[in-house]
Image (cartoon, rainbow, N blue to C red; front, side, top):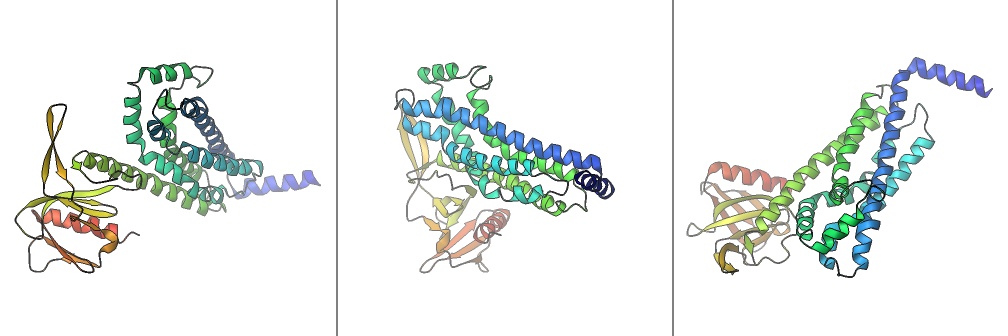
Length: 337
């Protein structure tokens, strides 16, 4: 009886779907699972061979703060990857011709948040790693830890960049899976949705990473703003303008949580060399949550009005196109989809 049932199912599959595509679907899902296992293995190398020994050294190799920057949320990335691997493994074990893998990978979207956060900090991590290599003890430690037996000849840089590449890998494999999923297959609608979700996630993460890099650039010219650089903060736009009058030109920064403008430049002498910075003043800022209304001025050219509960601000831009860009980005920031 089992042989008859299996024969009937095989006949149905061949008639309903392209048998070659069914084999390809299983191959792609297997690849998603196997690459996730490899990802877990490489994350484990980072934690066991580098992060934990450096922490156990209690500052003798690297300062604790630098260790936290280098390996920030690698443990959370590892936990999420293990959860994903378990989900994908169940799909492989229970695989049938009509299995809906799309449902399963859609359920992992919340597990991608640690990967996104890791990616946003990648530029800072890269710079800190370059600084860390100036330490001869750390450089020697890394050279001893990287070998064919321990890391399969992968460098620390190779291992640390793996999570950044992972989001794009999901999207690439999902696009491949979609190519081999027939329109009539019950998984088709889920794969389409998953492919779009991961595409949007990759685009949004890349955009946010660039905005976070811009934040770091802004931080290099701003003096006195406490806790400016945060994992969740990014710079959306900056431009010269006049705030509440035409006497002094200011540099205005639009971050995702606050608008800050500065009109005072201060010199700082470092190692007998003077550098100039924009001086932050607490009075020259507007938190986006405080804005009750905002609109283009009908009286003043190139002017944008921002209303708070008890204050009124006017931002006059030098060019009309600067005003239009400001309007678009501020509106998007205040009214996210």
